Image 1 (cartoon, rainbow, N blue to C red):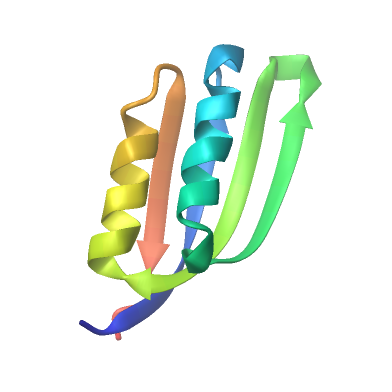
Image 2: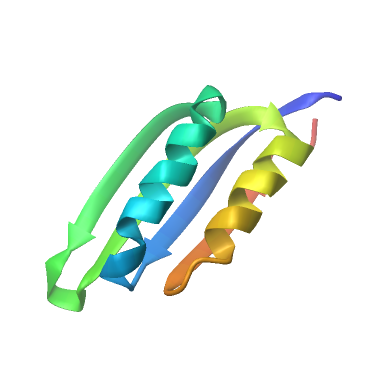
Length: 81
């Protein structure tokens, strides 16, 4: 299967989910090219942006697991080729 490059945006509103998010990202570290996390204290959320390179199956598996967590919103954008 062909690899794609993309970005994943993660917003964590439930502080109890932070460790679970980090655990999932660690399990899929082979996909991650770069990562930036910003704690937005005024709104009490954490925003994480990730540059990824992998197959759509692996990227979908990662974002699917993240999206199932309580208080976590995930959006992704991938290259077409």
